[in-house]
Length: 599
Image (tube, rainbow, N blue to C red; front, side, top):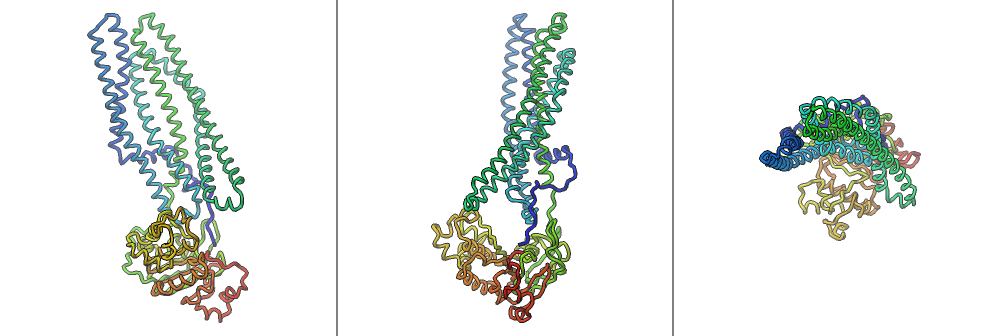
């Protein structure tokens, strides 16, 4: 089977540099639908910050005006004002929490939905080129990290910034001279701060990458559990996982170590500032340049402001780390699907089933051409078998018919309409697939069959199962059609899964049937029974079947032999045998290549 290469890298659009500011604005764009909530949040934060900053002012008035004069009236007024401020903080705080929670969760939901929807739009080509484990780890890790921006980083950044700006303004109004001492102390933070911030950012980026690799390896280990046990390779696989785990753990420790150093640097700088304020404040108190109440309130403002302000700086760095992770999501979101639906699709009222390949060439990304100038006419209602050696593009033909990929050259038409001009709904609604590797959902047998036609009745589901010779074994299951089959149908045999897939296709009732070794997992008896089903069900439908058992294609109308990406010969079974050409060599076993279903 010819497979496209798997990418070991995270999804990306291209290698051009994307500024973190561009990524940040893209992240914030998910807040746009909730602008009213955002404005309410900013207003509530401003009210709370202003209310909290009144408390040091109360302390100043208490020290300067209440205590020296034993002013009971002022004391009661201050007490009443303090109670009112606390009430405002509590009430507005409750409203703020509710608003913030709505904003956080709605935005996080939108991001998750947008990424999953985009993953679906990227389609089959993306899935074949990227391992499932890597994709799941990428989405789970990076989406969760981006959601942290809305749940924690951005709200705390805004609240801290508002509080800091209010604090600095009040500090300047309280004592301009003491405020001048604050600036050089704050700048002390930048002696070691930038280096620590840069190292913390890079370490955080590496930690995110290592966590994706760890999650990917965990998925791989769980998915391969049967093979690992069959080959007694659990210890070997555990060693590989532990290696990824240790790497991830080491990068996490390194990241938190830099975070600790960053916090220590922050505390040292604003404590040095506190000492300088005490020294200069003592001088001002001695010279009458400031009152005791003003000095105490200034100290309170200073320590809260510096704590919040340096926390804002740290928050900016943490958001920068998040942007390194969000950049991968940004690139992913900007990926364009290899196959896109026509903006104004051509309507096709009734599908007759004529399919024509016109000089079609195709190559998977980074590989040589699988198909080269292939031309093939499939008549409406015809049963056409595709045979040939492995790697010649047989299964690729079926993928092109379903527009899993588009040809690199040439075109394919359905009833004389190019496939590119049809809507996905029209095209894929007319197709019925049975793959060699069938996917079974981890729900009931009934729901798996009904997948082919979501509004099918129970009677239609059972009729389709009976037609696929699946009714008997389904009835013998513990709960019949309501039996849970387990993840990927683990409770069913390969033949049972294949018959459910055939029943799914039958209930779909398509005009065109594409079979990719549909009976490969069946024993001889079951295969003979399914062939009888096909003889009845496929009458009047266009059928393209990839087959490796040449005995199963005897009764097909025509057989096309694919060699080197082209149709080497085409005709009926007896006709091709009499020609003693490519098909004869396949049938007689003189061809040295393995005859496989997947091209």
